[in-house]
Length: 79
Picture 1 (cartoon, rainbow, N blue to C red):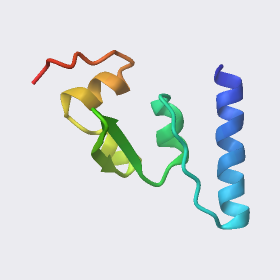
Picture 2 (picture 1 turned 60 degrees about the vertical axis):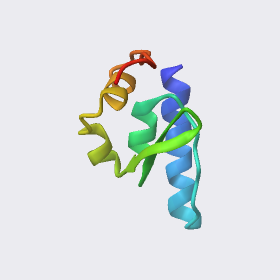
Picture 3 (picture 1 turned 45 degrees about the vertical axis):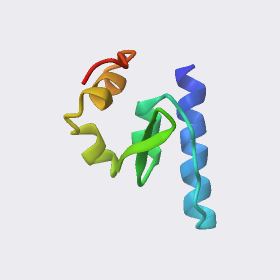
Picture 4 (picture 1 turned 90 degrees about the vertical axis):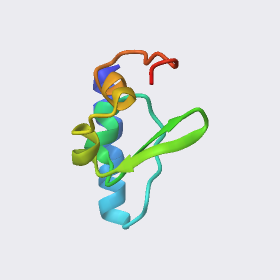
């Protein structure tokens, strides 16, 4: 739910800052990913096919990335 997701993101960021550690978070929530991450990677068909800063990731014009960001289920047969 949105409240727990936001709270989890806050805790992750606080721990990263206070302890100086790296955190790896696996999520389908692109809003959370782009809010807490220094780098975002997207996996498709078992391989990382795009990795970048959150800002550049959100600006991606790749059809698959756009579909996920827009909350759609990408069709695998799309070019």
